[in-house]
Length: 201
Image (cartoon, rainbow, N blue to C red; front, top):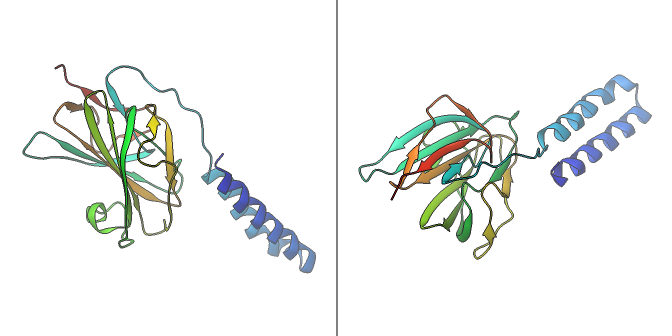
């Protein structure tokens, strides 16, 4: 579990205990329910990371866009609802080359405009002759992006890099050396679902 969930859960449970002491117990029930939800929301399950020349999903959620460009590259967009695991992972092993934060709006994360207009954190990782860029994008409810990594850090494929709190979106930019293996509407799991395979040289 992400430590934030413990803090939120304990604070809300303590608030419920205070309310329960000052008023009849039914008034404290909503706080206990929210405390339980926070513990659920901030879960961080272990994942089996596939080997080979593949890129894994950086987030749990539903693929809402697979957009090609004229150079043969693709953008994949994954929408996370509040019931998805919100811990983000790197698609490939390599070196973190850049971490760039950008202020922005808080549009509904499933909208296409969220990719460029919303508050976001862009991470670039290079490894094995390839570069992948992925964005942690805030949503309507999500108001805080957390990134654990900094430029120069070495990461394994599927390694935890951060999280987005309460509903969000993650975009992945894959160069023409990658063959996309997912389609719009599919659900993926961070670190364990393959979203692309490296084309033979």
